[in-house]
Image (cartoon, rainbow, N blue to C red; front, side):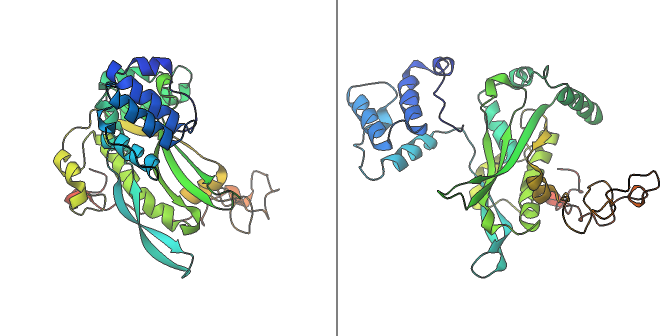
Length: 327
C-alpha cells in the first residue's frame, strides 16, 4: 500500500479486462509518477474514446482539485471499511493541558472482513505459510490448542514514528497491520491509526488509543462482529453498517502474533523501562544503574519482581453487559 513500486503484471492480470486501464493509470498517480491533473485528463479522454471502465470519468476534470476528485472517485467504490471514530486522551500544545480528541481508526477485524469479501477463508489461511517462521508456527499451534480452534490467521503490528515535514522536526506516530507469512501480501500494510506526536501524553494517549484496537482483536478471537462500541455504548449514526453486522461471523479466527517496534516505541506503547535514569532499567526485575555491576547469585535485584513497574493497561469496559474477557 505504500511506496512507489509499480503495479505488478500478475496483479494487473487478475483484474477484469475492463478494469485494467483505470487501475494501471491510477497506479501512475498513486505512485507519484504522474500528476493528478494529467491522470484525470487521460481518463476523461479515455472515456470520450469509449474505453471500458472509465464511465465515471465522463465529467471534464477541474484544474485545481483533480487529485482530490480522483481519490474520492477511487475510494467511492472501495471495499475497505469506513473509519471508526473514537475519543482519545491527548495533549494541547497551546494550552499545555490534557484534552479529548476524536481519532479515526481502521479496525483489525474489519480489515480481515474486507479481505474475506474477495478471498475465501480457506485460501487465506492456506496462503499463510510459516516455513521460514518456526517461532510463529509454534505460537499458532499453541494458540489454537489453548482456544480449541482448528486454525487461525496470524496478524502483525508495526509501530514507529515517521517524520512528516521537510526538516524532520515533526513526527507521526503510526500503528500498521500486516499479515506475516503470506508471500503474496508482502506489501500488505494497512494503517490502523496515526497521530502527530506533539499531541501525545506520556502513556495516556497510547493507553486510551489501544482500547478500540484490543476490542477489535477480541472480536477476531471470537470470530464475531461486536454488538456495540468498544466502551459498551450503543452504535452511533456513523456506525450503521456495523450495527447491521452485529453478532454475525467475521469469517475466521485471528490473533496478534508479533509486535515490531524499536525500544523507544516499546517504552511509549508498552510502558517498558529504559536503561537511563534512577529507576528500574529492566522490565523483569528492579535492577538499576546503581547495582548494574552486581551480578552475583545474591544480588538484590534477583530477589523479587520489579516493584516500580508501571501499572498495566486498565481492563476494557464490559461490552454490552457481557463479563470482561468476553465479546
